[in-house]
Length: 196
Image 1 (cartoon, one colour):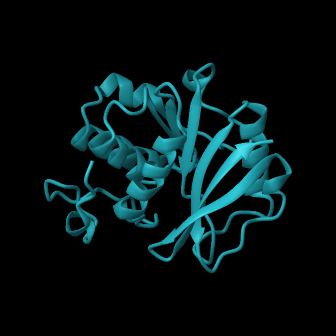
Image 2 (cartoon, helix red, strand yellow):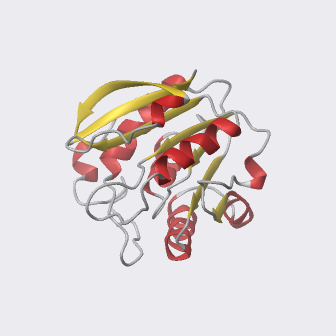
Image 3 (cartoon, one colour):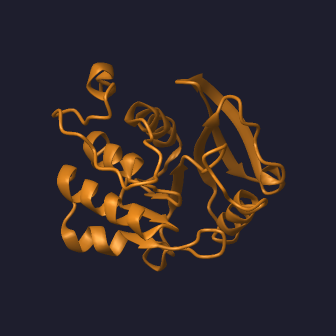
């Protein structure tokens, strides 16, 4: 697969259509999503399910559906904001081959610090996400640590995620996962996390 850099400069997918974004949600660059997915694809085994627990507008899931079709068995996403999940569903319906039934079954409004998508339980899962961080985010302290602990409870062994290169990793994440920085690109640090 070839990454078409110019096709992603203005938040557009390869056929030139703009991705949809809910109000008050950050615009996550598709080029960053593509990089995350390349890393995750190397880690995933047996076409595991892909889950983005902080899916926002569904950029990671949409790019996966456009550029990594067949590489992941299922695409799952969740977010605490219902407007963001609606935007994710619209992007998936507009730009991927997923049916409406699949989209509705595989996206949910949940708090991933203590919940997990029911339809995902039992699947071998790879998490790929851009966790909320920084000045734009008003998450209570410890939220990301709780989410990672929940992933451990669900026996998620592989995670790929990124943070702004000026944002340190939250403390406590390494309690359950061995964290390794694998790449710096697009003003982000990219990490893989494997369960200890």
